[in-house]
Length: 231
Image (tube, rainbow, N blue to C red; front, top):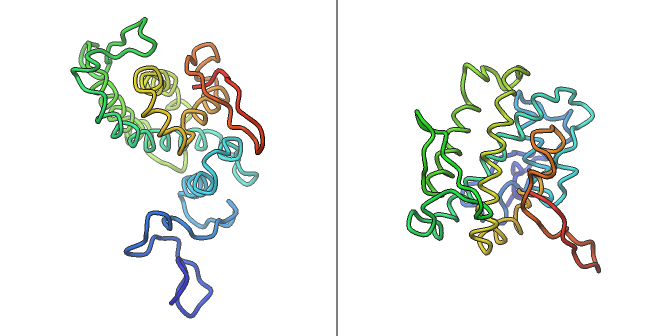
């Protein structure tokens, strides 16, 4: 039988999941150099394979490949990826975050956030705020008016990202301060909040003092972690 991702009797590699693949085998085909990815969505595919190789290596994931000089597209595709992965955290939160347990959207408990995904901003339960903002952000990022192409990104369209960033960050903050066990389970596998922190600082979408979540640094082998200010 052919190895996973390979065509039987050949050396050709098919970069797709075989029918009936186990979860641990998903996306397990060999990685490619960015310049060797022959598709219009090369940036998307490259980001996915680097995350799959090691989700904890935030620097490698955010490092723009040498063959890609389109920083606007790099920034845009990463933001799309954050929204995609945050849907898993949202699904996990629905088990513990309800309109009864969290009738308002708060983070540290000192400020209530209104949901801007309505004709007029209004109070929503935390889980409604989370779902509304993920849906709204996905709608904006796929808008043909703002982003008519995923190959050529208009810099003017990226001006929407700072406000979206602040709302997305509140999802991490709510999970961290109000549902720590769920947050830790998700972050321990994905390192998504740490990646988001590095991303927003790199593109100056938030300042370091706006990041209220504190994570443990990922320790190197034989070392213990220490607390750092992180998103």
